[in-house]
Image (cartoon, rainbow, N blue to C red; front, side):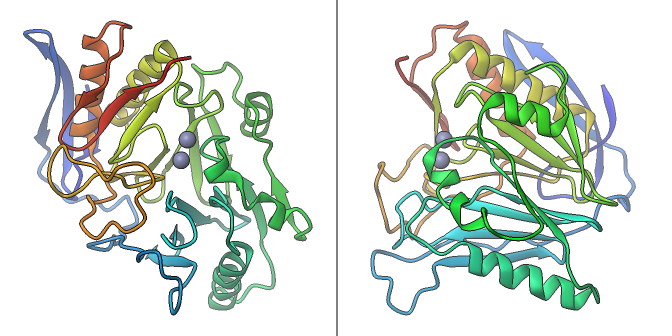
Length: 311
Ligand SMILES: [Zn+2]
Ligand SMILES: [Zn+2]
């Protein structure tokens, strides 16, 4: 049981308790009845549509300000069908860029533009930049080379040992790390299973939880089923104990129609599912994974599909 947790789409603090009924895991939440003043609010767009195959007149990235310290970038469909989402968070001392895109695109320029605007707005001359990754797959690291020569920039290595060392994670994957951006603490949660070095990042300032390719409205590819099950379990424990307003992943593959997705490789996705998921869907995923007891099979749910891959 924990106090102060938030349900998706509302700003009312909730008291939540996990319980099992007839073998099905569920989360019972009751409102505590007072508005939260602890988290910085922000705004998500109604749609994340990033065009079709034609790049003429289209920006290579769609840039959205969640608020003045958290920016979400989505790579345009015409540059890569993966259309990954990237996140840029500002603290007093450092900014964090989570992921660098799927390649074939200039990612450094929009990031530099955002950083310059932030510096101007805050009357600052410079800020250090950390470039880290939700995980090491090519559609999330392809732009790294564009930051190698950038001054004041640290690129976190992609392997598990580098991620552990940088974020100070003493015991992988059971312990968490912390990154202090200066007045903004980020919790770093190891979530291997989709990929060995996968992490989730929780922003204590906004209550936003970033889950990469491990949890998003689409096909959740699982390579290590045991590690994935434990990771989802840890994520559920985390959201029970922390106020989480949005769970945001790195892709959108599902349609608005429940249980339907755009096939892999689809470029134009005009009827996409919302990006943000909530604790209800995370608990549902945990329940699905637990019920399979290590023998994972492809399972379609309204907002995501569990998709084990052969090792
Ligand atoms: Zn991936
Ligand atoms: Zn991906």
